[in-house]
Length: 482
Ligand code: ADP
Image (cartoon, rainbow, N blue to C red):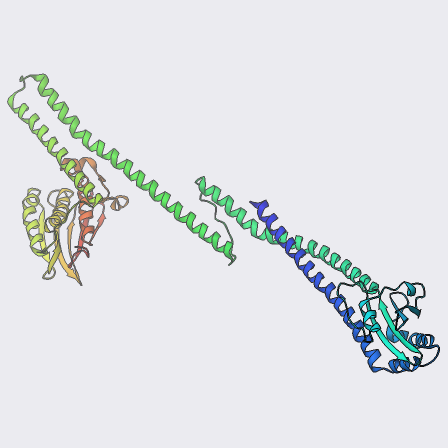
């Protein structure tokens, strides 16, 4: 890629320079040619029409040695006429035949070709016509007098112009050479400034493709490559975050599967061992022990069924398949119902259990049964995780367009490190204690999902050894989509 951009850029600039110089050179040379021809004819016309040379020539035509006299006049005006006897010469020709009489180049004179302008002069008119493709330029003027008719003929071989153009051509070639050298250097520098950031980007892209996101490409330029670089960095950052998210959700998934297997294996193991003991005994156990074994088997089966049921509910939440039946219901009545239903359990553990309303609660739009399920979970956790004889207080109130209910206990509390994790599936601070009290570690996860579906919040504050407060808030109007 590098070579291609370098080559392309250098080639384009070189072609451009050569083309430009050629066009300029061609125009320049053509300009010189035109100027040279034009100035020759203007000069001749001015001299022969406006100066006394013409008058002198006409007067000379009357004398007997007219040709010599005319030649003398022309010789005397060689400077004005630009006669150098080399590229430009004058001749006196016979006005009737065009034959050479005398001139500045006696050698070339007799061999003069009969040009268009000489023919014009022979017919009596002035020949000032310039032929653009001719290798010469000439003027032929008829002059008649008493001694006869003559033609004053000036011819220029254009050799001065040709050598001037040759010199110009050399200068242009030189200029092309220098221009090429400069443009090669410039285009290499230009290509380098373009190619280097692209190379850096390519390297970084290769690293990203190999999973290494550590390198960020620096390019503060405001041009397209600068923008591309920053976009690349953003893309790499986003990609890195996505991969991190994927990794952590993969980790959560693995942990979840491991937890499910473990949670289900425990009851299965104890069911199996109790059932095996019963089978092995073949009826030899006393009725009381048999009854106890059977109760354990039933208890463990119930536990398994509850775990499976909770998991099914969570997976339905995840898939968005759980239908919520929204209605307007009295939040206050739900709280009272839960309070009364849990009172017996609280009493069993000798807890003082109180209920307080801070305001008259408005009716709420939501799924009553599921909200009550959350309330039950909040209270039953407080009962479970508070030593017998503890204090549990349910408080409810309202703020703006929301209602809230919190359950505070002075129980065992949760260590700081675990507080943020209690809403995770199967997360339990003390597995044995949770299991003993029939917990599955899924209660708060389910509660969290339910409250979220209502656009509410569920927050937990706790201090180890001091107690826990869990608070649910709900928007009175329910979720937007309900
Ligand atoms: P579980 O079925 O184990 O009660 P939850 O999801 O309801 O599961 O709660 C998760 C964990 O959070 C519990 O195992 C317990 O360790 C902790 N927890 C919940 N509520 C309280 C509380 N009021 N006091 C102390 N710990 C609590």
